[in-house]
Length: 218
Image (cartoon, rainbow, N blue to C red; front, top):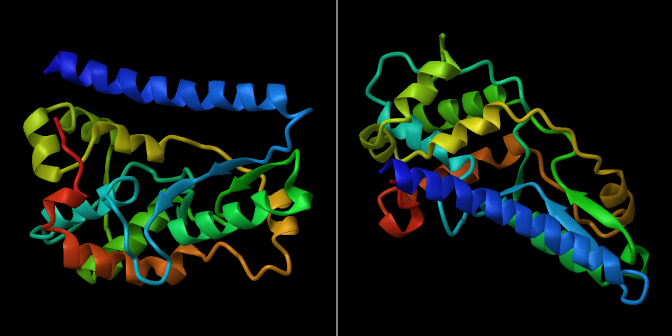
């Protein structure tokens, strides 16, 4: 089991390296081939329908809330000070198609991320209120959550990967200036998380028992 976890982590690291290496290769030919580099945030479901192909990323929080819904009090997980940069799939697709087909996009790199992201604690709170009708109270130390998710049977029961906790630790800021400027006039904007959380939760409620939507947790 330990070996499986190590291979899982190695696979994620390898995929990140491949993305970096691919971008390096693209930049090497950028002087002879028109190129546009797109860097999306963590992609979630459609902003209006909530539809998604799989429940990962921010949906891990919904998996936790679903399993812990029997508790009288739902605690926050860690401090939640890092920003949750989750962007709807329809925004990423529309913006990517537009920017890669416009002359203005040649030679540029775009961060298709939320220009005004909420902190993880705020995201968790919104999901909790929308899904369970109550706000989180108290705080579960992140180290305790990490220890709990180190146990396979807890990961499987919660349907949550241990790496999902990294969203609470990744303090990163993305410059969306280029994307916002070059999308002006197109009608394409990244909708705020709080305006789309209802559709996201509704879709999850409808499909939470669909095994094909959930990742295989080891």
